Structures are given as C-alpha cells and as structure tokens.
Image (cartoon, rainbow, N blue to C red):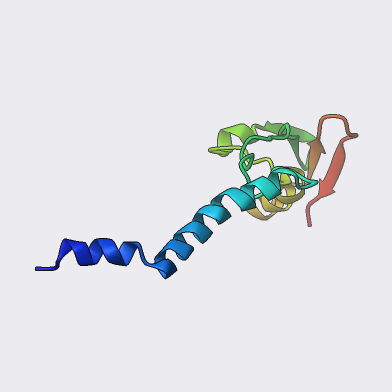
Length: 118
C-alpha cells in the first residue's frame, strides 16, 4: 500500500508545480492575447463563437427559368461566424445537383452574385 505522505510530497515537487503553473498560464495568456487580435472571432479565444455574420440567401436556378430559395439555416445545426458560406456553399450545391444551372448569392449590403455551375 503506498504511503500517502509520499504521494503528497510528489505533488509538491518543483517540476510538477512548474508544469501546472505553465498550463494555467497558457489558459489565461492565449485567450487574452487572441481577444485583442485584429480579426475576430479567433479559434482558442473567449469570443470564439460569439460573433456571427448574417447568413446569405441562396437562390437556385435550373434550366427553363425555374428557381428556388434555399433555406440554409434549416441545413446547419449551428451557424459559425468564421465560415464564408457565400464562398463554399454554391460549388457544393452545383456538385450535388447536376441539373442546376446557377446559384445566386445575396449577402446583406452587397450586390447579388451569380455562380455558374459547370
């Protein structure tokens, strides 16, 4: 049976303390430094999930002038502020539906842009 005095003494040793204090310092220093980073939200920062951008609207266009509005919020379990949906969603939609002609992306404060499908 181990002696409890030996276990307590090993926790008080200098290398264990240094590792513990270094770990605690990292937990405070890294998020604090990222809090003042120029672009937010930043991974490993305290504000990582606090900032969200408005989700763009996606209008799908098929041959024959048929269109449909995609509700992207119904597909996302949680919106993330750092993901550029206007950049990544149209190529994915074109790859999923071979009959799709184009995707019109409408972002708040910007002119609508059309992404042609191959």
